[in-house]
Image (cartoon, rainbow, N blue to C red; front, side, top):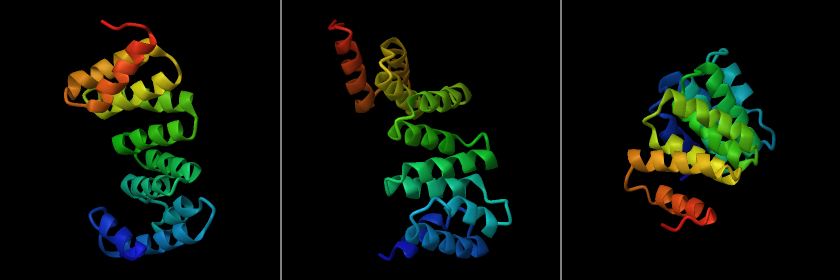
Length: 171
């Protein structure tokens, strides 16, 4: 499937109509440039009012390409458009972690779990970041919360086991 068709199919739910046509231009630009200009191009194509969902989509596309700096810029644009966007904040936290910006990732994910305490994936991601930071007590707490919210989460179970094992807590 041609990448632009794939972009359009994934984006169709967000805006439709003229927004889809603008999105095709953004997808084309994003795929043909080595820079991170897609968020700015997107803003220009939408008259400075691109919805957070579109920026989040651009960021996810960059993240799948392994272009973390571009993904981070797009997720930050999404949060400027809608500071309450849980998806954008979660994705920003993941991208920051991938980029090695662990303190910033923890900060973003802390905001997420404060605003959405019932979101298991937020606690799970924050637990991973704390584990990377070697803040094992906080990692344990977040991973236990994730397990309470999603008892079947094999990732939470695995990482909680690793955290407890690294603390030599086997029982």
